[in-house]
Image (cartoon, rainbow, N blue to C red; front, top):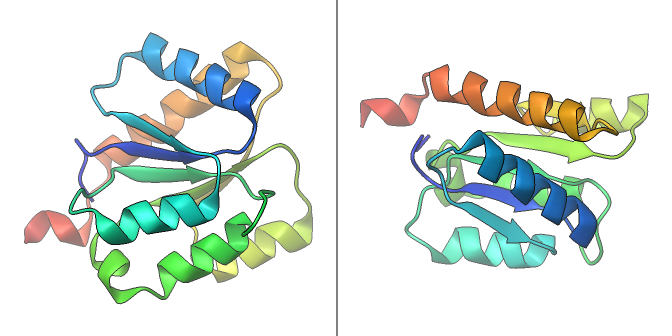
Length: 141
């Protein structure tokens, strides 16, 4: 895990992207924030870059490939596994099956987006600060 790497946000809703960017700017993390509206674009970026992202925040319901399909492709990709990128679902709503399915794919977190800017900010802050403190195997390379 590269704590100074970019935070990858996979979110197809433009309004949600704008709200998240506003929050990241307010929280003033040093990480770049890279948005993708499509899971295939994110996967292509992850496969073709030498950049090691800090973490991935992924919506579940997206066009072309959904968050579960994307997570499965990342989880089974040997190259991406060695990058130790925490993968978290960050979605509008959920149900038990979605949460069970997500953890079966070894996601590191499943969050429902709060419906207020303050709630969203608090959640993002907790997520980022938790992962900033966390130790990963890649730190011993």
